[in-house]
Length: 330
Ligand code: GLU
Ligand code: ZN
Image (cartoon, rainbow, N blue to C red; front, side):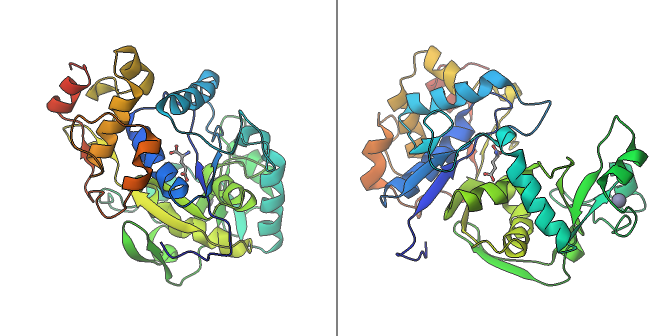
């Protein structure tokens, strides 16, 4: 990946504690860890716990524990501190409020009270992965967030939307290659957060990665479509834009993202069934082209073997053979 050698290399692991860590999360984090550690960089562990009410408090500690059991580590994080603390998004609301104020002062955001139905009304059903384009209906509608809240009532929060400029945004993804998107024509003005202070995924992830001086973002390719949105935020807030690398997900035999119905691939469950951490890491390494099937390895063993070029561009399918190998029968 092209990086400026004078800027310290920093990556991050950013689990959302909405459920237990599974094989798919572990694979992405292993790749993120190896990419940074193989070049002597630093890693941050940040808990993305803004998604109430889906966040389960115990899941945050469990995610850290599961990752450490697999042999992954980090230099800064919720469980070990560091200069950019706190490393838990629910404790960083003041930081998001300040960034939102900056965007508001620049006239780049506005509150929107539309429901999903308002947004989709009059549009044909989108293709898989497409977004309904938002028309900009609320752009000049409300003087401030409380005025919008008066319309939605107490049961639903308005959204902060960012005004999408009508121009191409281009970036080169480390895995998916060159990308060009005109957001005004695809998604339209997009949602930053549904929270008075801007504490929502799109704004929080950009502000945190910038504050924590992250230079490389490795994550699942389900997030590729929001990358151009996030680049706009980096630009609007005058932050340096990091490198993005979106890796293929782990899916079930039906090609859908790993879920409960595919069997229990929670890391804690796999360990409990007698799979050693080395067996799990070995399997993930095999899936990335770094090991023979059946090898037992630690993340540190993989440092000299790490390569981006062998990682298949297709999702990893957890099929019957792999389920049997892991002692999971579905
Ligand atoms: N917390 C997000 C997730 O677990 C990842 C966000 C990101 O990497 O940008 O899906
Ligand atoms: Zn609206």
